[in-house]
Structures are given as C-alpha cells and as structure tokens.
Length: 155
Image 1 (spheres, rainbow, N blue to C red):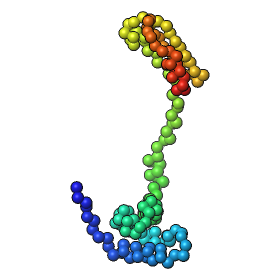
Image 2: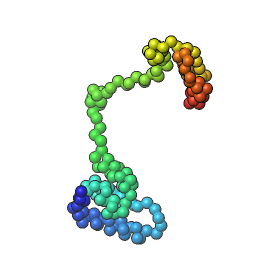
Image 3: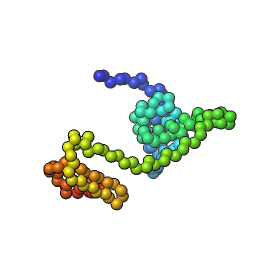
Image 4: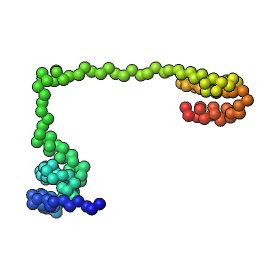
C-alpha cells in the first residue's frame, strides 16, 4: 500500500509555528510554553488534526490533547439541562449488588467414575473454608501427597 499524501497546511499554521519557534529561541530559561501559544495550537489542532499540528510544530501530543480538550470545552460548553428534563430522565438509583453466598456443588461419583464403586475417601479443609473431597476407586494409584501439597500450596 502506498502512503497517503496530505494537503499542505495553510499559512496560519506556519505563522503559529514561527511564533512558537521565536518563543523557544528568545526564552531565557526552560519553562512551560505560554498558554496563548497553546491555545492557538489547540485551535489549529481542532481544525486540521492533532498529528499534523504536533509534527509541524514539534509539540507533545499529550500536552496538546489536554489543551485541545480544554479549548473545545470553553468554546462549546455542555448545555445545561432544563430542571424538568432532568426529572423526566432521572433513573432510580441501582441497588448495590449483594455478594453471592458460597454454594456447594456435589458431583455424584458414579457419573464421574462410570459406575465404578468408590474406595478410599480423602477430605481436606482449609481454615478459610475451602474444601476438597477425593473419592478414589478401589485399586487406584494416585500420589495423594503431591495432590494435597499442590492444593494447599495454591491457597
């Protein structure tokens, strides 16, 4: 894919860039750029886009975005709703969600083991109430020590 070619920016962009460059060359110490220059750059960014203005003038994208948002909110303040409209559109407050109570799910061993009769049962509970129950078929070879160590180590 080829690159898209942008139309050249108008002369007023060059004029603001020249004022910014003049300020940069004439300042005696480092410090923030005057708000008047930021406001001019923000106005141009609203009209011609953030990226072209930042690149053309050597400005920080984030700093210009902040000023642009502030500039556009000053230019176009949000309309205040009429009190009657506020009452019509007001929604009742949502109730706070209640924490769910712990639930217990028992899985039948017959369905899991395919009808095999269960042998030894191992039940372990932690102080915070987490519990694991293992019902093993007769003759199974499971490393219970490793299994319990892993379960208790996860807590």
